[in-house]
Length: 168
Image 1 (cartoon, rainbow, N blue to C red):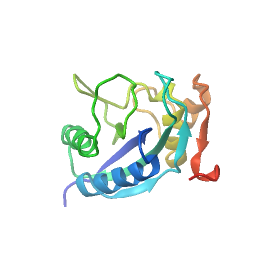
Image 2: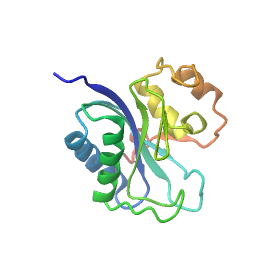
Image 3: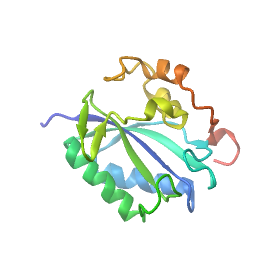
């Protein structure tokens, strides 16, 4: 049997039926990438970077996959495209966004692929759901646990557990 890679993804979106879009992304990713082993709660966060748009729902996923990192990025982009994602505006509204947070403990710096995600330590909306899944995981570049990175994060945008708001 081929080695199974551990992949942490962050999925999110702020257009259409946000919760249904997350469910659809999980279904498509399970089929194309590999089984979802764990998923965080769904969190709602104000838009980051470009703030004049609806709030996002975000969720972290842990999958196992036989795909290489390069195959994974191609697959993730095709799932986004299949769901109607069009990259027209940086930080703009989107049906779905799928980011590779970690691929095993690998460090990859290529023109169209940077792993671990280079901005996760600056974004509470990424760290909160990741900490829920793997608080003791050590960031292979920064040498700190995800929990430590969350404690040090300067991002002040609230990240609210959507299922506990009565709406999710």
